[in-house]
Length: 155
Image (cartoon, rainbow, N blue to C red):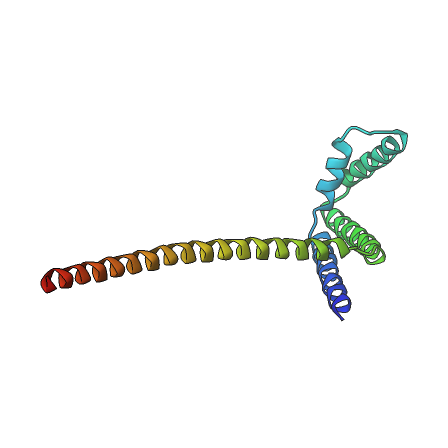
């Protein structure tokens, strides 16, 4: 039962993460991203080839009329967002470690609170015992003093 519930929580968190990423993908500025990719240094031949193709796309984009630029940017954004969202849906998010980490953190906090409460309780008991002992000693001295006065009166 607890595993079903924790798996449900992990699945809900994973679903929420995927939804937020999909929203972010819909709101991204594709042209800026492409410009940033083109501006980076390639790490290998494949990256260089992709970079050159993207430079060609940017050149063609710069030559387009304004209305076509808007339409192209929207189509590109929609296509990339759709592809990335499909990839996100295919990729499972494994949050089993998250549930365990949260449990450990909660247990650690409970242990600290318990240790603090035990320490406080021991301090209160210690000082309570000292106060009780002090009061009893004073009472005993008072009784002894009273007895000694009564003994003096009898003599």
